[in-house]
Length: 70
Image 1 (spheres, rainbow, N blue to C red):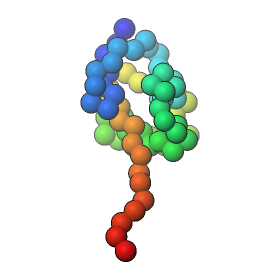
Image 2: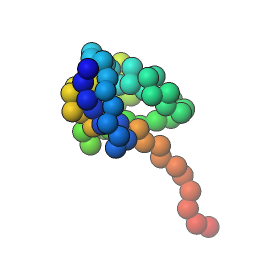
Image 3: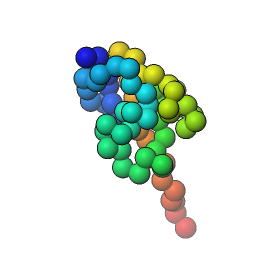
Image 4: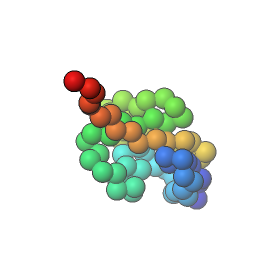
């Protein structure tokens, strides 16, 4: 088992693990709308299936919301 940080919380995961695998295992809400950072670097959506998560990586699932004042 490997330890990683997901949205500020430690998780133990089984490696090998891709970003797509991590999204699925965390039941990420609206996965088609999520942006992902690994170690504070944004991951391109086309790399989700190939980028391997490593021990001690920090992963953040982010949603960007529109809005503002009129």
